[in-house]
Length: 288
Figure 1 (tube, rainbow, N blue to C red):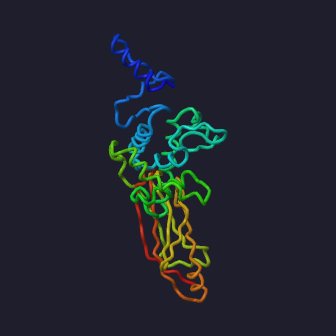
Figure 2: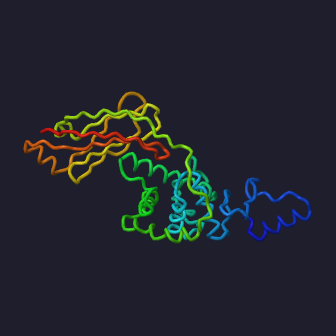
Figure 3: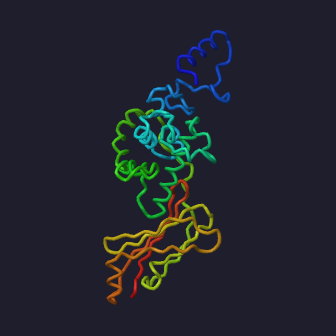
């Protein structure tokens, strides 16, 4: 890959001689624009940390994700460098097993590395909001755990990403446009939640969900007192309703076995790939 000085030299010569500028070193793609604050094209392994961070920030913003997210991950995993290891590669410490399908060739292609991280972050976010959890994009204190859910480090290392928030912001320095999303329409959600239920007999609180436009993950949660239990988000079947079952907390099970009724607030959510979410809630009476 051409160094910064070589590319700039070629541009100067091209201007003097009236020649077209140089193509990117691989594939004949356009050369990076070294005057753009937040480049759309990969600025090169030799680029400054600021340039690399702003390249990542722009791609995140184009996906409606926080600027800082990929930069924090790359700082923690590689020091914001495109590493070439034996089993783990790139800015995000991607395992070689990911070198397949749409990410094939990622060790030599930083754009594929960034695509993987942003795709994974969007998927984690969609699943979280579908399970009636807070949207991590709306709370900067949740960015580190969000990244940990993408990177899946050892449990003792899950807290290692959040401390990089300030450094990521310093590198980006407010140079990139705010995150935007063209998709702001929540998916359709149909749900059936029986008001009286017998969870001891059915194994949990049962809800039925359907996404008529087939573009969602659906999940459910039940709150009893101060305890909340969730059903893992699933993609509903294309036809009919999909059944989700929410486990009942142990104290509530004991109360039911003792013959006492229990009240639960049941929430059903459907979230699309842009984390637009539609919610339904119902108070349910749990009977012995």
